[in-house]
Image 1 (spheres, rainbow, N blue to C red):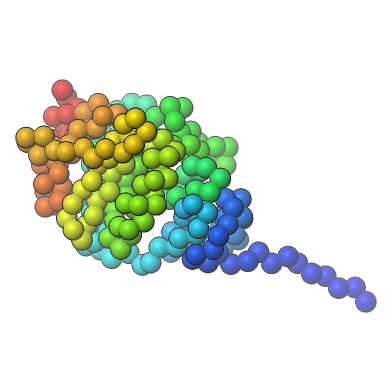
Image 2: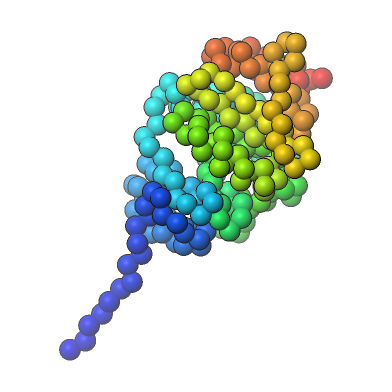
Length: 214
């Protein structure tokens, strides 16, 4: 009698401690319907799977940030914008940020299997229930890997933190007298913080255009 057996790939579970290779193997084995509804990240070798996302505290501000970054991307030849891409930072970290902006070849590039490898110049996270990890573990990971600018929109606290990597450490950029934070990496990438927080996207894009035109 002949018996056959197949090797079953274990399910990807929140809190698993895995290598990046094993994380990718288990994620690839997930049914497509689960991939579409589960954002999975590997942070310091630990698997994090997102809870369902609410509209006002995540989806809506995410859309506003994407609109702002998209306008800059369209106006800036050579830049690349990604929304929730998988980023292979190092052997223990494969995050899926809400948005990244980068110049291919500077710190990050795309691989043959179509992932981002290396540190994008700018990473943005919309943070409601994930504030603790976004401002602690993830921040340390991005800092260590050389992500030059890191933005965290803390939607429940109505605060936007924009960090700039200076001498190997993140320093929080403060708005100028007009309430505008200006990127130290991307010329003309200006953010009208109060307007963004209040949902005045027209003003956000107007200030951005002023930066692009300067």
